[in-house]
Structure formats: C-alpha cells, structure tokens
Image 1 (tube, rainbow, N blue to C red):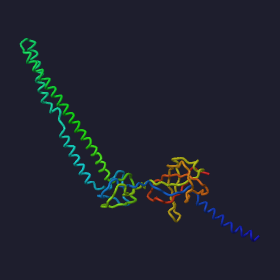
Image 2 (image 1 turned 120 degrees about the vertical axis):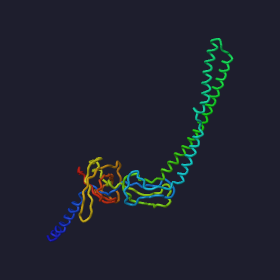
Image 3 (image 1 turned 60 degrees about the vertical axis):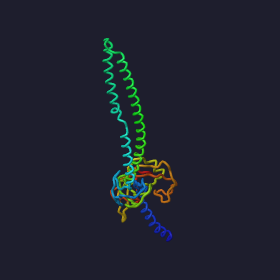
Image 4 (image 1 turned 90 degrees about the vertical axis):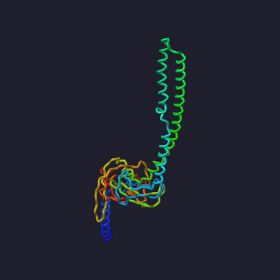
Length: 304
C-alpha cells in the first residue's frame, strides 16, 4: 500500500511535466529565417577606383556603388572612335562627285534634242548629231565606271568600319563591366574589398540581402503535406527570450516536390518520421527578424 502511494506521488509530477512540454510544443513546424542573398563579384580586373558602401548600407536595384579603373579601356575607345571617323571621311560622296558628269550629260542631252530638230527640218548636220551621241555614250560609260568604283570603295570602307564597330561594342561591354552595381534592392551584409585594392574577374566584392521580406524554411511530414498548398496563410512566431513571443502573418511560397531524409537538426515536431518535405514561408520583416533566427509555424488549417 505504501509502495502504491509512492508511485502515485512520483507519477503525478511526471504527468504534469509532460503536459507542460506538450503545451509549449503547440507549433506545427519550425525552422530558421533566411533572406534572398546575392554575392556580387567583380566582372573586370584592375584597381578598385571607387567603392562607396559599407555593411548596413541600403542600396537600390541597378545603383552604382563603385567602379574598377577603366582609363586604359576609355583611351582605347577614343582611338577606335578616331579611326572610325577617319575612315568615314575617306568614303566617297557619290552625288557630289557625280555632279560634274550629270551636268555634262544634261547639257549634251539638250544639244542632242536641238540637233535632232535641225536635222528633221533639213537644216542640220547629221555628223554633229553623231558626235553628240558619241560624247553622250562616252560620258555615260565614264559615269557608270566612276559610280561602280565609288560604290565598291565605300563597301570596302563600310566593311572596315563594321570590324571596328564590333571592337567598339566589345570595349563598351568591358567598360560597363568595370561598373560595380547592386543587382537587387536591399542591405549590404558583407564587404570583401576596399577602395584601392586590386580585383580580378570573379572575385567577390560584397553581399547584399533583401531583408524587407524574410523566408522561414521549415520541414513538414507527409500527413501535413496533403493539407497544405501554395499561398496558404500561416501564423509565424518568434521567441525573443524571457517568454517574449511575437506573431507575424506568413504565406507559403514554396513546397518541395521531393521528400528528403529527416535533417540531423529536425525542424518538425514529428521526429519519428523518416521523410519530410521542405517548405518556405514568406514573412514581412518589421526590422526585428534576422537571418538565422528561429521561428515556429502554426497552420490555420489544422492537420491531424
């Protein structure tokens, strides 16, 4: 009888402890917060001429934050443009250079008409008409030869310019790659180089993250998977210590279509399950959510 009483006394606190644990473990899944992060690497080799950001700086999409020295590239571009201009000056101005031929031909055409009228009236000299026709044919052949020569010359020069324009396009691309800009709007969370240092193509320069919207990555079981779909609303909770919890609204933006083995640091309350599915929940950041912070999920559509 005494033994039975002891068992009751011992088991009573144990049941209370279990109850307390279960009450705290009311979430459906949990995970850690992530953000869209982009590491911006150098697209050129040279000295960092300008680099106007620090960790914590706010940047906009396309905003230039620095540049790699491009003086030599710009000098090459100037020389290339000068060469293109010089070649353009060598091109023949066909209408201007044919103007003299056209004036002579126009004059002989009028003389031919006058001679034909005189011959028709019986007062003209046919030899004069023949001479005019001969001069016309000669001028027209000379004009055609000159036109063909100028066209061929211009085509050759145009081909030369096309080659230089291809080089110019390549130079412009290289100069543009010397420009350091942010690909997204966000906050600089890492800076890996300073002004004056030498960089090479592919070397990381800085990391930027969109901290306005955070992503909570968690894992769910197959039973939970059947009750959830994209764009479902969920409740997100964070623990700030000393019992302080904060609630956020979230939306499921991604559900893995493949199962995976339970991670070592399982982030679902059903730890006995071998396979789980990863999900991502989008949460609007009020400034308190940080990358790596722990968060809990509660589904509005309760899953058994």
